Amino acid sequence: MDEKEARKSRIRKSICRTIQTAKFESLVVEVSFDEDVEWTNTQERQRKSENIMKLLLKDFENSMQMAKEQLGLVENVAFVKDNTQPSREEDLKNNGFDAL
Image (tube, rainbow, N blue to C red):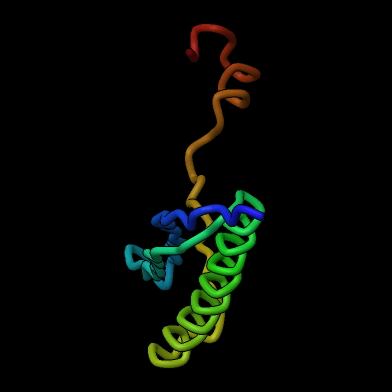
């Protein structure tokens, strides 16, 4: 029985997330993997790619947690936009089309 010759591929995967930590301040956490893999069929290559993704996700979760702990971030902060100006809809209702 003939065995298939092993092939090589490079698999690159990355995850990047930007978190707003304060007004006008953000934290970017990025994790990347660049792996060379050997495979003899497409199913084996797909399995190895999925395993790399599982490792990447675990590493990303750990990196996010470590960054939050080291920087003293308890949770992600959200900022509400200041909407003090009247809306276009309100202008239109009060002043007609001339308000546009």
